Length: 135
Image (spheres, rainbow, N blue to C red):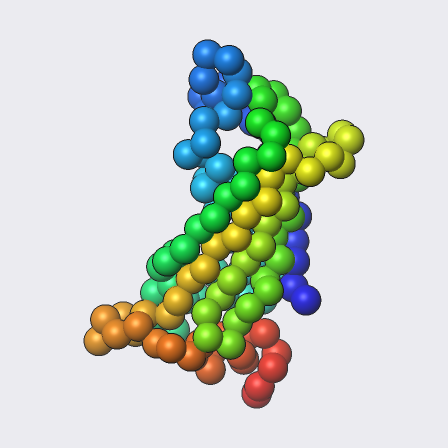
């Protein structure tokens, strides 16, 4: 299983008057972790483009269990859980100091051939190669 964890400190420009992170910024935190995860197997945005595929997010679910607050240090763990037909990444945001779970989420991305614009129903071989599943 491929996973990574990034540390983030919630900045002032992400919070509201109650010093709670606005819910829309969570997508940014997930994206930071997702990019680091894809670096683990050398298939981040530049490599995707070079392989001829775009990978738009088609589904994102977030469960806000506890708010993220100004200056709070959090860890965002990203785990690749599906890759055969799509890329599904699960996330866990936890407090860096206590380890308390704050947020759970997942994203789903599908391959789109950049030349034809067609969505693929099976992940292209390049993904399986990058994951070391085929040569």
